Amino acid sequence: MLYKFKSKAAGDLIMLEPNGRQVLEIVGKTPQPKGILLPADMSAAIAALEAAVVQEEADRRAATDRARAEGAPAPVFEAVSLRQRAAPMIDMLRRCAKAEAEIVWGV
Image (tube, rainbow, N blue to C red; front, top):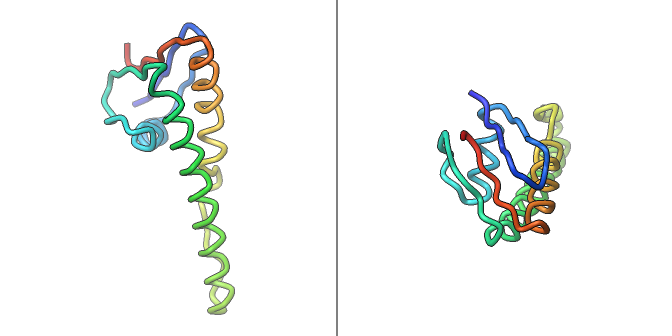
């Protein structure tokens, strides 16, 4: 399944199901086949995504430091970080918030 996020203020954004589900959970939405994100909720969604990116990066650094301290092999992370996956959504949220346009998916 794909998540296709649409808005009149930005181009369509397509995410694979696991990534779209993760982003929706981070912004406080229940991952469903259809939904809407209103302009009033976008500032909080941006803040939540940015906080999650910072947390993931801190967790990665901590895991790497812990492995180094224990003399263990460095941990292997996903090739694409949350920062890279969330960047297009954060951009879309900013554009839509500025234009006061909602974001819908699955419609």
